[in-house]
Length: 396
Image (cartoon, rainbow, N blue to C red; front, side):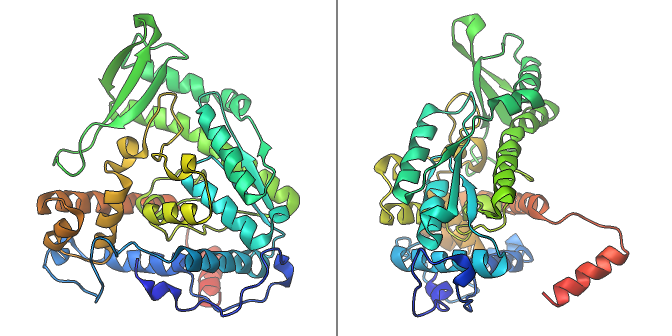
């Protein structure tokens, strides 16, 4: 990411414990909005335009520098943005966020506590029966660094009431008849995004108790894949319900924790982890979030972990479930994509072949279309509502 987004930082910082109601407003062009505009402007460009071999903007594209940021400066800027959003724009008394123990939520809870004071941050750990025990431990560790005493809400009973596990198990048993409730499983992308021109499809990988724990793999037809995902998406939606219930009860805002890869490429659930009142790190590449985590003093158990979904009962990385590439590589390719770097030049930056870059560019195009649908407002029929919305947009 370039340094251009840092130009509007105010000169004097306020105490981290200053109450939001007393915070002065400041003129800052938040990088979330700037990055969103950048993405939308580039979506109108075709892949053919990106193949031209030239850059549309004057940017440095040295592999070791394009994603480098000043962690201290960026933390200060995000903290100012959080204070401004909570105290001046949203007019809330603090924030509520779910903390999973992953790098994104861990960085977010520390930044929120630094920005608002630990007493204005409600952190909620929400395990369920298939969560990794390590997630709870890491969540506690992150909250300890932030100086926040977390609440723990086991969402298993809620998920059982919604039929999350039952509906999912029934769907999986249609392709793996030996699959039993309680058997561990995960879903993986079948193809290498960069190395295959085939349309992506998914496999279910399960450890079958009926076969002494033997691993079985089966391709998921689209209808069964959708049933499994719909059922497991309940985990994200229930967590968000818990967060908004706590926020409503204390006049606080819900803080979302997606990074740029997740936010821009649609790795979130509509009405679930994609829902929030503010998203303070949605402009940061995953590599940059890890850099902030190290700067903020998070333990190596958090800053050194491989990003996981912690959604299915077998261990599963985000790479094998959705992104198809290691986050460090995808960060670079996405940066090239968003800056309209040719596939030839991008291949030099990423150490991939031009053909592989082209395939990932196409995959990013597809994921961006998915993201825009997931993150968009509800459609309304033309009438008084649309007139009011138009007036609001014209006079924000």
